Image (cartoon, rainbow, N blue to C red; front, side, top):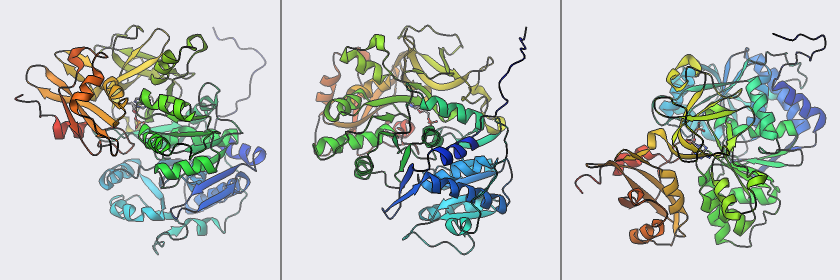
Length: 544
Ligand code: AMP
């Protein structure tokens, strides 16, 4: 029975508009620093930036943007992209962050699918835009974001600063329905067409609150937040909104994502939280190791690593050699994206080896996200740390369906999202990813975890990166093959690598072959693209 009592809370919608108003009121002195393509740093205070957000809101309305319309961005991480993150949803429209690392035909497909009507593009990305803009009939206007030294704005397009300049910095934001769409992101799936995930204001606000919690990313007013993760990848993991809600300073790297540029920003801007995929941090760790004593990262509270598994050797290397604590997180475009986070519970703390083991798991679910794993028949599996099954999640910031209802097979009848990640879950709730379901290696009917083999190989001092994938085998169906990238100037033979693995794994887990490569092929968001490795080397065991 419903208990209706006389007193109740206000019907106050959870919308992103609140963040703009709050930031302008309480944190006018906080700052946003962006590295431009010409490498110069742009600095703007929250007071100024929130005025610009209102100007942009006026400009968008004047351009004819209506509630629900999709406004696309084709841009690196910088303050103007943040202005779009805030202004587009605040007027009731939907920001669609195009992934600039995709092939132009794929971007065209996505922009058509989302029916993007306006595109805000970096001037440096105009050559890319030119490759697909004419394939998207919906596009009405392109607005170019440009700094000194960038390519000129084509005569048929508008220029961002010129667009804002005449607009008033007063704007009365509409009161929106919290379930209205605020952002649409496409999955970077390596099979099939990309699928759209629509975040509502409510899901984004809930996600922002959870991201700021002490045991999540703990974003606070004193923080200086550097999202290295692109703003076109799952809302830069929610960090721009978390920082604006908390009043933190923000630092954006622009297009300069090399280790030296990132380290310079981290040091000079006194960054406290930085976030990105493991590849970025492997490069940074290699530079820190090579230039011992050069960099001062004393103010870094944590670096958040996700998007792919953070190898334990990297977690350990950062902590022991450079005093940097890594927060390992798992998420997906479909989960807004924060899903689980590897915090060491106090009852499990104390033993360094055990702590490293826990930090290397993907962690346990953040508040309001529920987790379970199931076998191929849908049977829910025990949390024993051994039984492998597909991870399923549900919660207020987990997708219930894809845009246009594609991919309905990814949702269970009882309302859970099937992640495609194969995991074990231990009695404490820690999830450990053993593979993507499409990358699993099944040898003689038994699963072999590529992630565990990769982690072990990456702990060898000469190995920069390793990806283990399935090779076709006449007798066993599939056998593991390890692709290895060596650190510059280092060497390791196949024999040495085998010896390094021995004793840690069952014999049948040992890779049948090692291939030494210059680079592991990657997806647009920096994950290993094992389908490409399989296409190149997957047949090499046949006949052996
Ligand atoms: P995306 O939607 O592009 O963010 O990709 C989500 C996928 O990235 C997940 O389903 C995982 O396969 C992978 N992923 C994300 N975070 C991690 C992590 N910490 N460890 C291993 N895989 C991860």
